[in-house]
Length: 245
Image: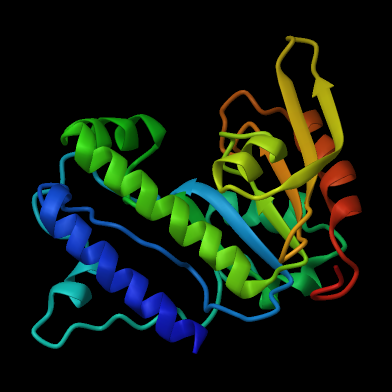
């Protein structure tokens, strides 16, 4: 079963964390939703948030992995669907990225491009940079292959990448998917700050559309007009129904 695969990946990440990152007490998180075959979408952020740069004890999420009888179960529901979590990014995903298409969210999978839990991108860079180059490469490869296989296994109609790291083409290239570019939309405000939505189509299985958004929706320079640009652009490329390739 798919969730069994997810539990196994969490066990593998725990081994990697124990080997290279045990000093980072905020730990890691792979998924914030159940895993679903024939998903409506795979929603990919940058990395797991909620970490503490100066943590002196294990994050509560990690204690269940480290217990005498560890619990590697996956969440019962996602953060982004109606009735899910209420933090800023979750609200923005519902309001601006899935406007008019929120019925897709209960069948979506939620994950991140990188799994270490930190307080932000710069903290993530520091944590990864604190280990050897070999360990860095092992971590990045584990994240890359996990996300690639997650997409293949779930066969989503669309992958929404809001990590702010890639264009849609770069996202496909990084995960070794063959693809075609589809479209690109940009909006620049009066202060010359640029927001971008790019779209690609994976041309092999699972033939998903990829939508990449720049910058990350938590970026402090994003204005209301940028968010309206996202709301008027991203949902146009989402399917009407779950798994409508």
